[in-house]
Length: 234
Length: 234
Image (spheres, each protein chain N blue to C red):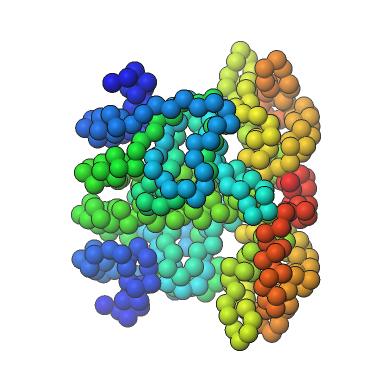
């Protein structure tokens, strides 16, 4: 087995919970795909022939509306799975998928997934639990879109992606600002204004990213009543 | 079996797909609950002891934020199920649920659901497919929140709930306007403004509801680029 396939085995919560036989069956039939930033993985409303696990980098799930606007539905990163539902329903993809950064994917063919689901009922339970987690994540996103102002959503996004570095928290923006704005449901110019304004709430721009110098101030902003709801508009 | 339990059997997509034995087992252990508008079904972060199917009326799933704002996550109506994930994870409810109108619920105890999932693997596949539908519905909602202006969301909501009556489409608002505004992620006053403005797009107020006199005009508004994004702000 390729070393990268072994890594997929460990990193993916769906595979790592499955019994050894099931895991081997799936991984032996899968292949690793290396994608450049912006490369298309599949298009909305095309037949679903494979499903994917992100091993590294970021993937954007999106739809193009009749109006021409692009709705960014989700951003997936390491260990997360997508297109399993489309494959199991034997239908078309419910969204398009692009590489949002350089990324590494495990591509599982539809036949292999269906076969496993047939042979191993426990794998069905793993998928059910994974789909419950997706429902939670989508509900959280709806909660934020309905009840938080634009600047609060930006603040919560930074908080979520912050990692300790020395005495402070540090955020490397996971993908470009235009995409971050689309994901948060604000205009790119609102994102720039929000980032500038966040200086008053303990976030400063430093080399290579942003530093959270006052976590308390940032948390206070996130939990406060959304007084500046105008920013929530795109 | 009570006649209302037989009805539940037919109306619920989860039950109606299950094999006879499974259906009988679940329905015999369930009870019918009649709720008044505004009555609480369960609270967020309380132990999940039952799951529910809506037989009639409307149920609101919501969360209260630290800021005190209420986020309306979903509105469920006839045939739709909720709290299945919470019960299967043996955890707390991920949201609160209230009766949004007078309603009739089928309450299935946690033990009965877990037993069935153990005894009948096909029932797991039914639940998986139901959870995929929920993911679709949540994705649609995110798409609308990110890419449609307030008035477009109101228009799409009316279109979704419109039923033919004579030569026109007619909408009885399914629940009160304050709740409709919260569900759509706009302020109640923005909803009133949007409804007034929709007169120019083929929607007129009539006794007992709204009439869509020009479906083409309404569809055109829904598909147009969101120029009035300011209305999307709460």
